[in-house]
Image (tube, rainbow, N blue to C red; front, side, top):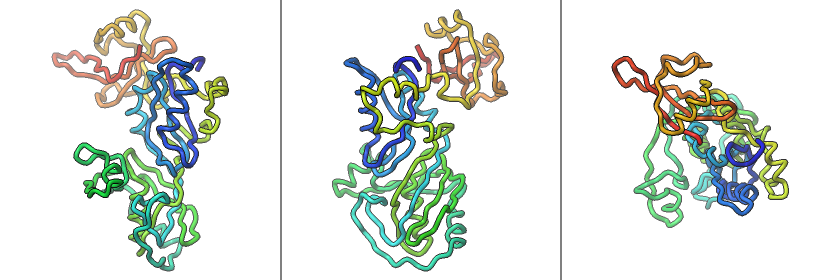
Length: 309
């Protein structure tokens, strides 16, 4: 990425920082006195560390596509202590004895959380209740009653057991709260618990090993930061592509809605699936993200999810 206008940046967030704080650091480093749009795809709690996908310029239009990807975490559960936030930052609300548990017992219990499960988000979360964030209500001492939701957990693997601590690797879908999973697992093990540490290892196809430390995001380090940046057209590597010529690209930017038969052959074999998104690429730039739209009469139009200038 030759300049910081549009794209994504993978950041390894340090403990104690907020996701918004990292966004501010990136904006300050890149802005150089000008207005500059920066966002992120998936919040990490201040106590957590690991992969934070930062969106630059038009990269902010990719948020929902990146957030929809699978996540992987390394988490340490501390048994015997529960807090109101379900993590180390909260006030202790319960202390219980920790039963004698074998590695096998813990792994067998953890396996119950694989698949599509029902989960209640923590009171200290960004989920809205009555138009307000739940954490805002909780901090004021107001009642928080969040509804259960269905989330997908692909795997829960126990890495090590050193009671009262259990370290586990979790692969899950979007919207899964690891704090809630940990607290529920502790109760199933006959006690209470809170997350002691949490580290995001992966988000979609992105890995924290490729990230730049948030400590290194400084205006004077802009050149080295840009070397870690990724242009828009490379930000969704698992999505199929269609190459279009410059003439059609310019018409699309002006609002033209083409039919599918006007486009070049699709790289990925998804011609008959209207639900799958496809990238339109013109030259070396991302033009749009689209789906099929059967408008009737046998003419399949292109439905634009996002268009990039």
